[in-house]
Image: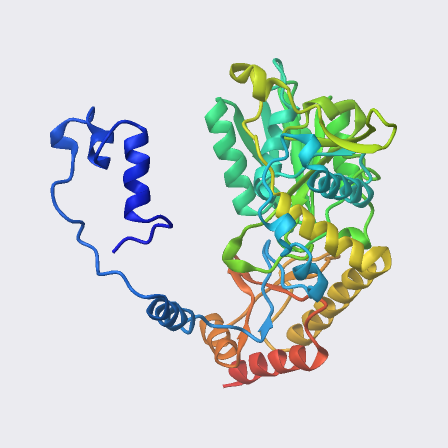
Length: 437
């Protein structure tokens, strides 16, 4: 039995309206040998109650951790209830690209507010209406920085591996070259970067904080990049910007990042949000859409899609980007989160995340055999050595704690404002107990 919201009589009426008597006639131009002449080998359909039971049984197999000490690009922050409820309203939940401004003022305003907040967060002049995720944003930023003479993209080896691979894929698709700037003590090697800044280099991307949680010397890196005539792209953790210098203050030409920490649950990797912002000078190179504020014929405030009919729409063969949509619902979620938290709330979330990560680091490194792998200041992630790695992580898992991520050289740990001191002490005690055996 098919689940279709129309009766058999209605289907027949529709078929007659298009001049056929059977739906198979719609495929009469398809060669007979291409048609399936048997039933699909599928199980019988289920009732709604049966489906509910089946899905619930599948969901019961999931492991829900009470404490999460893992980040690496997806972070377990506290999400106020209102942040979930407002985007769930049907006016927003079913919205798509607002092509008709006259009918889409509410959605356009929500995007405009999002862009404004991203500009305030990054210090930049203009933001687009978002892209798919943080890695895509980095790849799009690299693409917008290229010109006819400069086709090489540099990226720090201390950036997130997924970001590096996404930028590499973009470069492969356009026939451009990606070169990795090596690390030194877990951070970008400045001297190696200077040597690699040749005339064909278009841009350099650095992640701040980087994949290992360390704080890069972004100002110095940016000065070296600009001295070579290239553009400086910074990938940012938006929560960290509650405490740290903005990308604009660090000299960045483009600021990008993953917006997931701004009110989006972990959700098995998505849907997430890629934010992009740049200076007025590079505004017309920014991919995707930009919503602008204007006045209508009556002099009242109105919102429109600005600068959206560019090459990616009208001259696709010359386009530098194929981004033609945005993550409007995720962008709205980020806007609500930022509005609810405010500057002081965001600062507190950043301060608590940083303080608790340092508390966790001190507790772990007091255990014999555990030490920090990389020196230097960090935000809310750090790498330690960890003897009996599998045993320790398994013991934490049995206690309902998701431990750090195994990486080369050790384990990458993370703490956010959600973890209490008691939870951190409990995790430290479990690690100490396993290593003492």
